[in-house]
Every structure is written in C-alpha cells, then in structure tokens.
Image 1 (cartoon, one colour):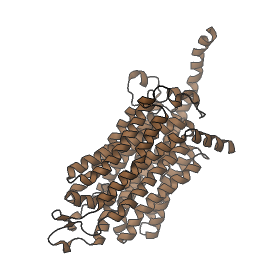
Image 2 (cartoon, one colour; image 1 turned 90 degrees about the vertical axis):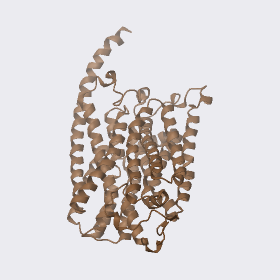
Image 3 (cartoon, helix red, strand yellow; image 1 turned 180 degrees about the vertical axis):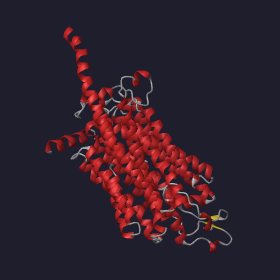
Image 4 (tube, helix red, strand yellow; image 1 turned 45 degrees about the horizontal axis):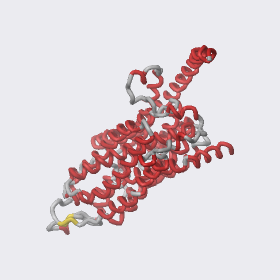
Length: 497
C-alpha cells in the first residue's frame, strides 16, 4: 500500500500543473451551478418580468449545458483543441457574469444563460476526458477530487450573492407597502432553487413588474466574474507550459517528451483517436456488441443518479413544507444546503477510498446506500429529524457515483475516451429530464410521489449496475479469447523480421 501511495503521489507531482488547471476549471463550473436559484427573484426585478417568464432562464441554462456536453466531444482530438476549448469556455463564463447585470430583458438574459450553459457543458466533457487521459488506470482518485471542486464552487457562489440579495420586493410600485414579506421571498427563493422547479401557485405572491427597480445583485455577478478570471489565465498558462501557443511552437509539446508512469504507458499515442462519437465505419467495426452495451448501461446509470441529485435538490424543500411534515420555511431551506454539503464531503472522503478500493466495490456500496436511504425515507416519511439525517447520508452515498462510474467504464473500455462523452451527456440529460418528469408527477399526485419516484429509479439504477457487471465479465472474456488469435496473426510477421 505504501508503494501505491508513493506512485500516485509521484504521478500527481509530475502532472501537477495540468491537474490543478483542470480542477480550477471545474471550480468555475461549480460557480455557475448554484447562483441562479438564489438570484432569480432579483433577476426577475432587473428584467421586470413575471415569475413564470423568468424561470425560462433555468431551462435555457440546462438545455445548452446538454448541448455543450455533446459538442465538447468534438474538441477531444488534440491537446491544443481541448485546452483552447477550456480557455474559451472559462473566459466566456467570466464575460457572462459581467454581462448579466446589463441584461434588462428576459430574452437577452436567457441567451446569456444559454451561452454560459454551453460553456459549462464543454468544461464538463473536456475536463473529465483530459483527466482520464492523463491518469488512465489511476484516474479514479483524481476524478473524485475533480468533482469535489464542483461542490466547492457551488458553495462559494451563494456565499458571494447572499449579501446582495433583496430583503424585500425589489420592484417598488405605487402601493409598495403591500408587497410580499421577507418570509414569502425566502420561501420563493428556496422553492426556485431547484433549477427550474415549476411554481404552479406563484400567482398568490404579489410580485410587481412595473415600478422602481432597487436591487444590488449586479455587484455579486461582477465579483464572481473577477473570482473566475484566474481560471482562464491558468488554462492559458498551461498552454504556454505545453508549448501549444504559436509563439512557443518551435519545440515539441512537453507531454510528448515525458514518459508516462501510469498503468498503460504504451497506449498514450492511442488516446482519443477513434471513439463512439466518431461514427466512421472503420472506427465502429471490430468492436463486439458488449462495447456498445457498456456505453449504454454506464450512461443509463449516471442518467438516473444525476437525475436523482437534481430531483432531490429541486424538490426536497417542496416536500418538507407540504403535509405531513409542514416544516417551517427557514428549517426546510437548510435541507438543500445540507444535501449539497454532504455531497462535497462525500467526494472529499472518496478521494481516499478510491485508491484503497476498486471502483465496482465503491459503486456497489454507494448504490445500495442510496436505495436503503430512500426506503427508510418512505417508511419514516413524517419524521423531520430523519429527513435531515437522510439528506446527509444520501448526499454522502450518491456523491461518488459519477466519478467512480466514469473511472470504471473507461477502464473496462481501455481508455478510448468515448465513454466520458457518453456519460457526461447522459448525466446532463438525466438532471434535466428527470426533474421535469418528477415535477409533473408531484403536481398531479402530491409531494409523497417525489420519494416514490426517486426510490423506483434507484432500484432501476442498481439493476442496471448488476447488468453492467455481467456485461463487463462477458466483454473481458471476449477480449481474452480474441487475444490469442491476434498473437497468432502477428507471429509470422515477427518471425520473418
């Protein structure tokens, strides 16, 4: 175990600048994840629109995040294109933060959020892909740390915006004294914090669209733009370090000069060439059916687990303030913070666990834990204390599923890079679609259906994982059976030389 620790530490030191750059880019991603929910009412005042109109910016961000995740795979061919895409995306995020206070129409704001969502999607795909390429067999440890930085960024952005949020209505009409109270505004913010959770009874809140706008939220966005500026600077510094910028192209890139000490040094020249999204017949031929089934199963599992994260974060507040719990607004508002804090703590812990235990073992424990927690929630559905405990344990269990699944799937598929694109796109799709599905079910069947939906999807996810383990075994046997045939074909060539 001591030798393994030293080897991973040596890998980290050798790729220190690259790793820290990718981690910082995911911190930039995390900044964009959590700011929209708390600031949505102030942005409504800024654009002087209704609550129903302003919630379209949630959809714009989520939809273009999905588009960016898919398009990000186009930049995987070379290190130059990958780092250029990361630099442009990180810079775009700072620019969008600076431009948001100038968007006084909801359409302009939706366009800005769409551009930011696309940049987030590119970062999500390229960041995961480059870290997997860099560490290959040992990528699980560093993927856990990578996703920890998402949580860190998501923790920073609400802390930055909180002092600048309006404590009362930020549009003063002629009869402004009749506006919503502070508790109503806090209730609205907590309800909207779930990335576009539909607010069907919003008409009961008298939110004015005409009058004097009094909001200081612009300062929060400008502060976040400044906080994010070192990220594109770090990517640019890495491009200079790798001698990829035109003025430094006289020498070959450093990565081609340094030997890799990871588990598959001989495969470095193959990274990223060909993949599932490169649909030329020459690239698709020769793969067994299990190759494509593993992609589909891995994508389906993260579709479900990331969808559960989005659903729980989006609707746990709605569930808590509804019968039978009828929790107070302030107490219920803490549930989402507890859930995200436990996700960040879980990813921090799994950095240690991921190099002590194999990814399938971690995934088994995590998925079983998710099911058990949600079954207990169904049983103790009227307990406020248990809801807080379950939010904490659920965050700890589900936090490592995506990075562990990514490391495991890429390992099974021999680090071809295509699994990263499929999994990132599937996770983004699940987070968007499952929220819409569960939100419509809650509206028609009641808040208890929220727990039932997430529990059922958890069971489906675990069954798919068991099927993935079986297909992995079949795939490994097929590779073992085909390798002697390849050796026999190569034998005459080696004998004739």
